[in-house]
Image (cartoon, rainbow, N blue to C red; front, side, top):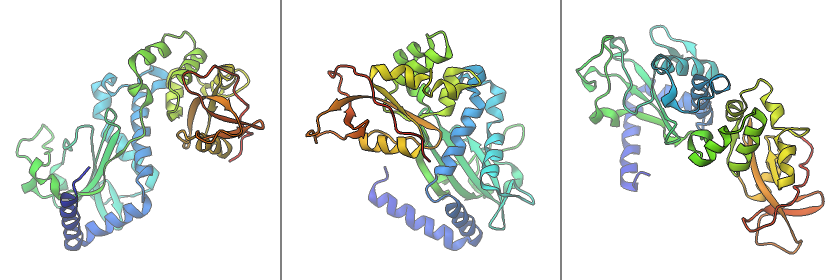
Length: 320
């Protein structure tokens, strides 16, 4: 986290950039208007990485397992997916036209590794970076000045921004939280236990058993199940939800009624397309020290390791 004096300096510098460059100010304001919290940006980056990994077909969850050609095209896919999400117009000379201004989009999986083409000189660039291992991302705007670029160039004559000039980037979001790649960050022993299972259904059962209290997105479910009907493998009527209920495990989805249960239990609330599993135990009506949810007319709390397993209650009917 930035120290207060450094943060103040950054804010002052940002105000100078905005005052001296009206086009920069207009693009900055438009992007912040489109995505005040950065959640849409983060979702696009999460989906793009997942798209490249293609876990449903390949079973991959680690960026290192991508082929070189796949990594090379990551920037193009980020550019396309951002334009699709925000419906940017095509630029006259650069990738996008935002607030009436041409903006080029450059993505790098290495911070500072953005490759700037010669024709971008004088134009605004949207510089994007994401790190699945650190679960964070950044996006900022920079008016390209040739003097701020390294002199060495690759075959395409693209240059990188000198480290000492990265402080001229006007950050829209810096080191923001990237939705977690659960399989990548799961304990290796737990991950091995999940993938040791023979069928997609038993792999999903093991995932929800071992990754309790974490938001698990649909792509994780696809990667583990590796089946077209992966959502069926989560639900009741033979899916993980009914298979784990005898062990006291609830699997909450993104329905409003399920989110309310998660909030009452004090566990992460599932976002769009997410699931959260947790083992519960029945507690007495007079117990107030633990967050509790009322289900089937009884009070339930997150189970402690020492609590004996019991059959979990039925979740409320689905409502949005």
